[in-house]
Image (cartoon, rainbow, N blue to C red; front, top):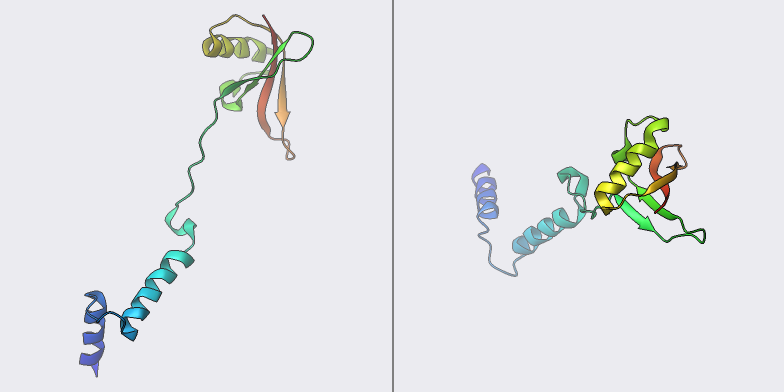
Length: 123
């Protein structure tokens, strides 16, 4: 009896069953079940999400000021009083222009976490 079990396991591992037999179909079904039913988290396989630019110029408003979205990582650890200076330096590096920062406003989500900053500038 144990020889039959070992022989069956050996044939399964070596894929030794003829095509269209019930054993072959069972192996294919098991492989497909593994592929489609295994949670993706088991393999830490997450879809890659393209990262947006850390500084984005938004459409200008009617008062002649420009608005920039700045990722929170670029201003992390900067006190509120110095955010304007830091934002001006970031924008100078990213755009190559000297812009006067009128104000920098944090943007919060529903949990009050900072998701970014809106920097209002004029040339």
